[in-house]
Image (cartoon, rainbow, N blue to C red):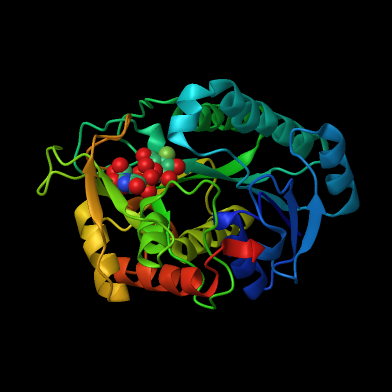
Length: 328
Ligand code: UFG
């Protein structure tokens, strides 16, 4: 049985579906603070509880025979982490330590951890490899990197087996159209553009047009949520086969798209014209983040399958079918 903590969230719910499709048994632990009950596949068991609460963890580890844990439950807004770092260190660091402690108490030693490109900060290279210096510039990135370091120490001291996955920009929705992205508030580029093109927002703002990039807007590496989910399963299998342990992998497409290019692709996919407003830079945005995912390709055979058009197409299908997200 695989325990998916945060399995009612965006990336967690897609991974749960994929685990079930590949015949894993899944129990989800989620406090539903940002996740959605409706996003959890009905083949999974759902336990409502909080990973910061030792009693909730004891209950779940006591009730099920857990082989491995995937941990998606975190706060992940860079701006909020700067204004409220306590929330990030409590929810992303302290609560994760409680989870790791309870895993060890209950004899569970396999862990897949969701990390982020934000651990790199402003990279001094065009293409980021796992060897690129980690130098996070905000509490969110620091909170994730702290857990990466804790995992190294727990591996050395307690034999914890883990894989860290550093996501670049997750996007898209499941091809079935049944699950997708639903954040409140929404801050990510692609859902904001699509919500605007659906008529739910007046315009789309481009945060900064004076970056040192081809068209002056920020470049990001977008990766389909289904590709991310697949990487988690390969990572899990590599731990289970004792093929790999204490590894860190980047998960991206290896291609960068500017904010302008993303908006144009959204216009192309939907056949609608966006009302684009140029505004100031958003604090803390690096000009360019592009991943090399060569390491996970060579070691686990993972490669991104979905293009930017396919990410936007699947996201568009989700947003048009669920204009108000899961709630309506
Ligand atoms: N952007 C706009 N207008 C908007 C929203 C975003 O121009 O209305 C721009 C941003 O400035 C950025 C790009 O679109 O250049 C992508 O922004 P997102 O907010 O969609 O994603 P981020 O790159 O900021 O964030 C992602 C993850 C974070 C992670 C970060 C690492 O969502 O969890 O990458 O840098 F920390």
